[in-house]
Length: 191
Length: 348
Image (cartoon, rainbow over all chains, first blue to last red; front, side, top):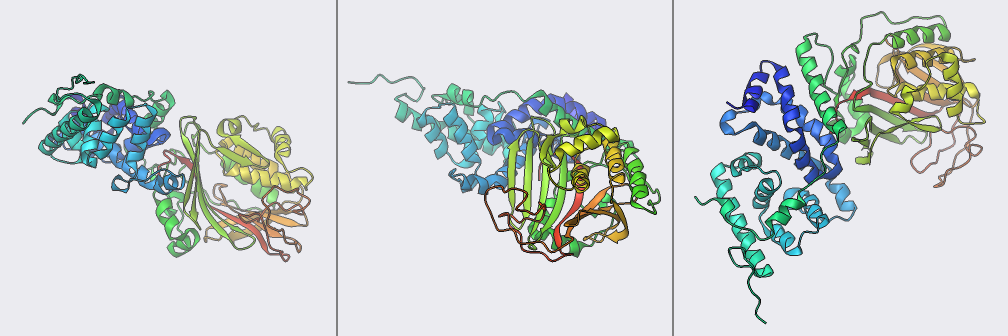
């Protein structure tokens, strides 16, 4: 049993055992929230921890590590946040992606701000929402495919195959646009 | 099954780099830790004291009619308001002390001054202060709102209007409390003197100039009583109010939500400002401003206008800034404080 798991299990009897988890995971949870909700992350962090504390008895070690479970709670808060701000964002002229409650807008804005190549942005945009989410959880949160599956609430096997498909699609789209071959190597341009 | 990582994506490193965000500020991490620590403290204290409770009548230890509350806040508001979590720090539990009975306003105010100053609440490090109130203006328009004013720069302040429309205005950083003509931060409130003479001088500087000074100070006292003023400051505020010439004990009343209270009031001939106070602990429940004489209408206006046009009555204006003519005795403005206190999060 790893440290997190032990603390979680113990905290159902001894709430004080929960406290160290906050210090262990606040930074990565905040980064996750900040990538998707911007400045609202500061407030959401406390809300996520309170929800996790209240629901600590629901944690099931059989379903995966504590980190994935915490991200799952954070994800619910991200979705709720976007549902809350959706009318405001629409009024401010941001395009709305109703399929995922507007969450893509924040991510896309982040990609834009990072001056990510338009091809990469476009390729991400074309992925189905669940594949994009899995891909970003592995790219940004450095989660394993199994952890990402836990966060998105889908079976690990499904997540692995969808991630594989997502990466293959990305590779195809980007190779076609960037002039790279399937191995990602630049293709000599013929003039 | 093949390893998803085996598929190389051109630009992957760029994508990873796009996810870089600045590290969370220490005060943000501290606020999260504090929130959890308080929850743990409650769960382990075993005293059943006070902690995260939904904002319902239970949080103030009083019964309140459901129908009345729904009527006050509107259907949308009911859902939004109920979702907010409030912290009542240990020590803020209402005691079973008998309510203050007094022969005159000064005696009553000095008694509640003592009750307030003797509170042991410690909300100096709470991340938010929340004020949930309903306000009825002179034209009958009704606004239900919740202000979540942040203490720390890392947090976001919110002004949530729940009726007649649902709106959430967020602003980065510490919230400011409207105190008379000024807007003070939580930290500025902490610096106010708790000596009553020094405090009175300070309150005069926050008052609208050119108005009846007693009424102005009385109004500013009310503004401060729903802010996170410390127990010492609250005590001093009631002491200042007790010494104001003309302050009058009305006696036992119920506020517009049916809560029992004791009313004190002060007028300047044009308006009368009444406070309904919980005699058990000095909590401000409601402020009612009524017209002491017929007041002319104030037309709607976008730009701020001089006090002279308002005939000295700054209260009771509706959203576009107008007010109908009022007969003597009519309500100029009525504000009911449903909950006032520290909150852990701004997550509504």
